[in-house]
Image 1 (cartoon, rainbow, N blue to C red):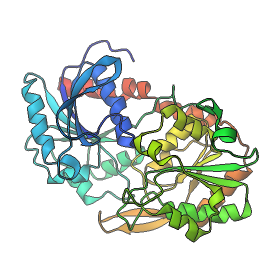
Image 2: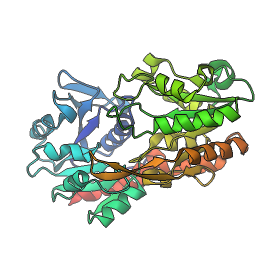
Image 3: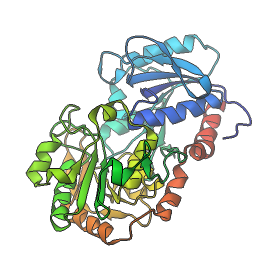
Image 4: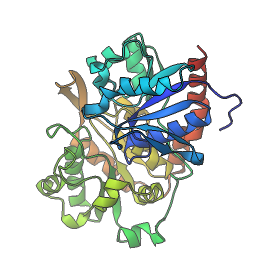
Length: 399
């Protein structure tokens, strides 16, 4: 990334702490680092990943930025305006904004007065949730859509937005065959040469009743598929228990009749504290297909990461996912599902459609998909920042 002229401005970046092993944490890391390189004055405002006091967060190049802790209340909505004012007083001559990378609806309960807000907002339903619209439609909020479908929904809801996708580091996420000097499939995962490996990379978080990541539908579909193809194995990169508010996946697997020897989970501590990105890329590369249909995605970073590693994907044919699968991947159909909590519609992936996609993946040629790699290249982090973020931020802070 080449910067011809530094951008002057102040940003309080509200999200998961940069670098935490979450989707938001990884995106925060990419973007905060590039913002600082652009000359912006940035502080991290944590809603997950840091607590206890204001510290310094080391970022690329040895720079350090203020790192404000999460609050005692959910999403740190109460502390965000106070932390922003504290940071702003130390840099009073700069145009400022709170930058939010998180579900926008939770911030309706905040007291932001006339503070300017940039909201990089996910839209993970097939209809615009009213509380998302309420927040984004405020005159002090500048909306950024992270998917083409999110942009379409904002446009149809009379919310002006700029489309800027999530990004990945393609120097890391590329085809890899080894983990810690072991052959990934043969020595690390202990697979036989003819095993067909289906991978899932999704957080096991929910309200305990409805699971947006469609674990039940995907596992049921795999169980049907595996009965026909006994050489099929399922790697689930997620917490197996209900510890994070999700489903008990062991019970779900048993209910669907999936043999225990056909399922692989990662080391739970390594999962919790964050696997090396290179190792995750090796796992993606070992998959014969990534299984990723859900009720709805605001973006879906694993879909892009897997394709960057040359692995084709199975995704939903709605919300963000419909635009994030290359031409040699597969899209499944769904049926409407009413989300009473958000008063908006999801879709539930149809199990038979998932099974059909798995069959097509099984019958297809295996190995690295160059088409998938080419498709994923548009999401390379430096490219996205130079072509999307840098012009947006320069124009925003010049105004």
